[in-house]
Image 1 (tube, rainbow, N blue to C red):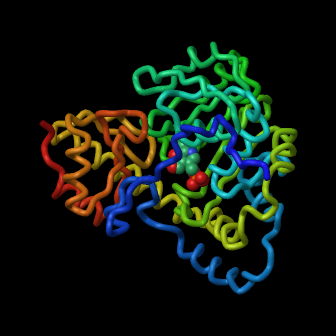
Image 2: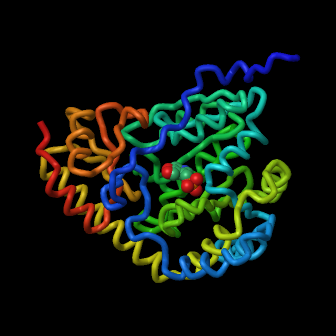
Length: 348
Ligand SMILES: Cc1ncc(COP(=O)(O)O)c(C=O)c1O
């Protein structure tokens, strides 16, 4: 019998480690979830759809893709739906990075961009952030198959303007620039910030998720807007039924409920200002954020994580995200805010 051995490059790979959960959802500020939850219309749609649980979902997510294409004014063959945007990141790696490809990422990067590249035997070229922002000039100097730009960035929350991304696309030798817009709904002007209009120019794709502003993290739906040939390649690589029927129905309902989406956006931006101010008033250095979390530099990372944990609040230690000496705090709801305000000690 042949001895079963994992591919040699998998040895020593550091797996993704999710944020810790607190005892209550209100205190779970470690995974950038949506503090207001999903729309009530989503709940209704899922309850209706579950009656058909015995039937396979639409493999092509026809209705959802059509709705997304209409929303973004792109042809439907430029849209692919995935089991969270994480699945799409893995598909990109399988198709374009396997067997020796190269991805250029900011350092620190969104961990899944790094892990997916390493899993398929590709190489990551890390380019350190400059002043907490992507150093697009330095990234354009790297010859890569894929260049990842997370905008706003995770874990810093910083934003690069669409014009900067357009210039980067023009200068970068990368085969595909992938702009991950998981948090773009929380930017001051999401339509102006989004790189979707640049997809038509070629060589660029945009990732979006329903996990953040639509509150569907537990159902796993994301999508990619990309040139049709990229979508066709990925469609051939994917597992046919990866997006289940509850997720498809939920995403459609979420997309139609603009009122809830706007409420999440307004709440998140308002609460982000309050959290930023709270940390600043207690003497911490906060990175100005455009996302649904803030990165805070702290004198004692582990001490603060422990102290808040004792008060029922889970935050993400910066060390787990490539920024030692910092913590990342997701924007809370009202209950989480009251706990945070009570429990946060002064810096130093
Ligand atoms: C930058 C970024 N991209 C993608 C994702 C994952 O999104 P999804 O839940 O759609 O897989 C996250 C989740 O935290 C993220 O921070």
